[in-house]
Length: 295
Image 1 (cartoon, rainbow, N blue to C red):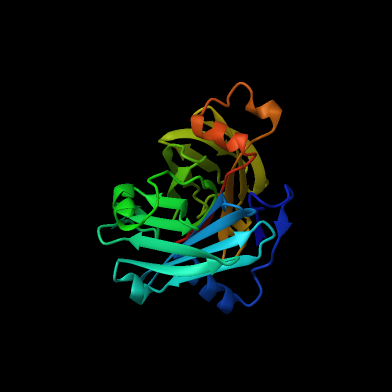
Image 2 (image 1 turned 90 degrees about the vertical axis):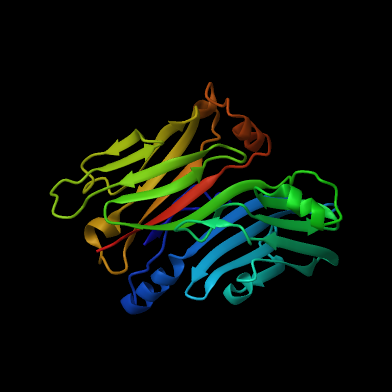
């Protein structure tokens, strides 16, 4: 299976093989389908830039959460795992240390709203505090955070840079997408019917508006195209080889939506406030979607 580069990788496409060991691959796929990974770039006070990874998971025992902080070289500084059976308590805190400095994690999911994804939809908060400074604050209940912690009520400076998500469907795959830090959330629908169709095509809709159509998909099962969302150029990469030619039991299509920072594609479209912030920091955002077929 061919995977796409993350926002920190090179621009070329790397190739990975997930066809070997179909039983193990299928089991791993089912496990991965209940995981959403979000990456945020932040600056620890007095230290180098870091990447904060937030992994939301779901299993038979409930919701789970893992938060890790890596330095710019990819070395883990600290990590906290909230197991599903502990997550059932819905609120709590943990402490760790990174480079000799205390790191506090606070969360409250007692009123959180969940959909089909492991990631909560609202009514929650997750805070990461490094040396009494807020470095990451997620959720829509910030007032509750500042009632519980001894830090100034300031917004986190972390920038949302990458998200990986798994979705299921027969021919329609729906996700919520935020294409830049502090940007508007959009409804993205990927539609492709490959069952019994001689010449399938691929459609992508954003907020019910079709923004892309790929015809002759059998010949164009891999490719890329630029679309516009809120005046922001987004490069869409797709790989539907497994849908067309692979085994249905362990194959998936992969899509990546990545913001374009090249000068020729920006002007005159770079009007989004959230995008201007990301551009200022020289950060691209990438959304990677693994689409699995329900047979």
